[in-house]
Length: 106
Image (cartoon, rainbow, N blue to C red; front, side, top):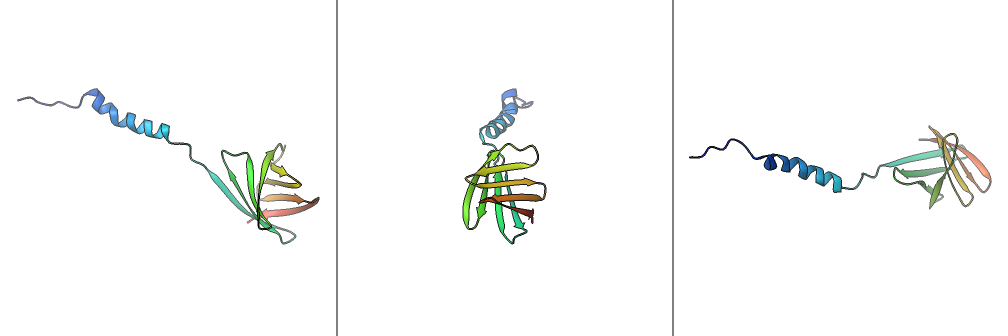
């Protein structure tokens, strides 16, 4: 009669190696940030940003607008085709057609 004293090294190592392989092959999680803003002129809009993207996605006047990120010394700024969105903390400014509007995050 033979007595088994334990699993061989490859039997013990296989489950952790398989788990590591699955985690390595899985893509990174896409973190999403969503905010709703109300402005002093009564306007309101939604903004979504993704951790792996250098753009902000706005729902503005019933339209989807994609604004690429631009350099800003303070806060974060996105801009394209006459629309600029800048935010820092709870405050935001949106500029459209040369008109600047102050907004706050809800």
